[in-house]
Image (cartoon, rainbow, N blue to C red; front, side):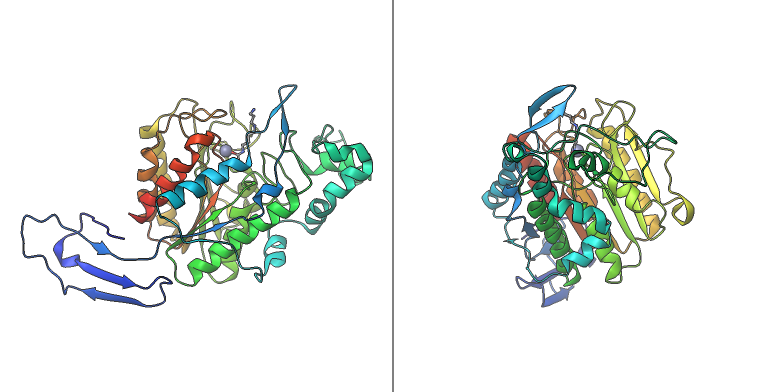
Length: 398
Ligand code: Q9C
Ligand code: ZN
């Protein structure tokens, strides 16, 4: 791939890498264009970003979600991923891979989620059908919850009834759990883990192209279309292989409440999120600017809520602010929960980003010059989701 930047001639370099980036030969200063009018240009040859796609994603296909008293068609549909895949192939941005099946997945899951919650997910469908055999025709949605207010309900005496257990582990009724949700979510985490291993092996960046998304899922809860927090799994895995400080910069339209909560009391993983103001936007109960982390993690969470209707200029200023914080933190690796529901045409969101803006986002992220894992999160304008995601990756690679 050929790239041009505004670097000056003294930085003129050619990198030659074979497809796996194992051999990199850096020939600095050997080629100096002697045509003064020629634009300063940095030519870089490198393999396209590795994309690990979830081959089991189809197994999660919810029918309907509860919205304001009505069951409406799911927004988080399998086509979302297929459109991204098709666009990456169309642009020949492929190096599209399936995750290896010998990754230490269980340990990576348990490093983020509680064992109880993982066991709940693993048997949830079976338990749902056992509750009533006709449930096999219906997605599982919760309809009763233990409000976490003092003396309202006991949280220390979990019920056996599955409908109640579902309410214990899910924070909304918009996240249908289906026969294959667990298999799909598990394989999604494998994609995140594979992306981590790719950057460890020397890739500059890798993309976990998966659904269901992850950033709303917490240590022991699902919600917001999410079951397993892929970005959190990636960040923790990066820590576990020795990256001392990891930053998670969440650019989905919605606050990454699950990710924030996973690391709220830790100084080694800095969580940042730019999102719709929770006073009016989902997930409503978290994501305010005054949530700065707690205990050892005080100062290591940053929320930048923006009003509905925010356009690119203001959004990008927030991104620059967040990027400056990541630099100051001296992160050794970056995880980007990448949602493109900030797009002006998104059916459930309120920002006004345009397709071309996603190129600039990719470019800005690249400038951090960090090993980077991106995870696919939201984005529900199905027809444009492929172009918007591919633009971020192209901006990053350009
Ligand atoms: N009828 C992610 O983007 N509520 N989750 C939407 C629309 C839930 C979004 C209501 C939005 C969850 C990963
Ligand atoms: Zn979202």
